[in-house]
Length: 283
Image 1 (tube, rainbow, N blue to C red):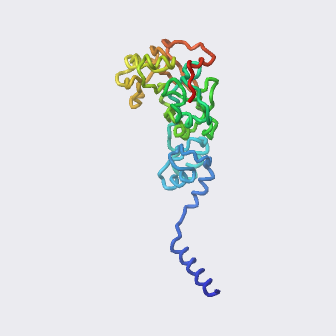
Image 2: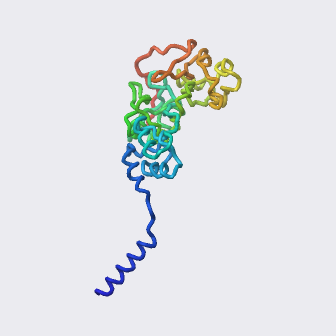
Image 3: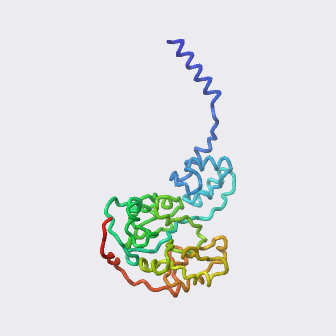
């Protein structure tokens, strides 16, 4: 037994020497300088993967949008590289149909989850494209950057949002997307139903009227499937002019934490939820 033990120890020692993979000690040090949120906003699987990419020269410190600018500069100084630049991305919601402006056609009873509700006849909202308002995005956000307002609509705190994309993945209606901060012209709707059908379900829906496309520089906005679509390749041409004649306020101009509607948008004065549509089937 003693001989066998010595033999096995020798085999292990030999294997350790031959199979040893060197790991740069700077990776551990860099990982300690990162926020350890593993959010993926940098494009890597987690903070350690990002540290490895930094050491390998595949990434720049500024790609971590969760870290402070000061800490990213410390990382750059530690590596002896430029901090780089990275435009911040923010989660944007393509829906403004809260309970005070969007109709409900059925009462959902079950697990309080948008994903669960979406499996049952679409969740009960009149607009089949609209936000169900059960808060999956709020629950999955690790940075407390999303809250539901009084109308059951998610509101993103742009100061807290890191662009991790968790809300994008969890939304069953594909209403969230990560947008560069410079994208200030925004269509807060994804409805693709014809105008009359859409207006019967939501007061702030995009009707595809085309006024924004006519007022914007040529090619910036087009109408597809009754919905305004912005070509962000031409984002430098964007201005608040495009939103002014939108009759429902579905297309907005983003300014920091605020979204501004055009002067031609109908004012929303209702403060209470719309009454449920009758008759009320159960789903």
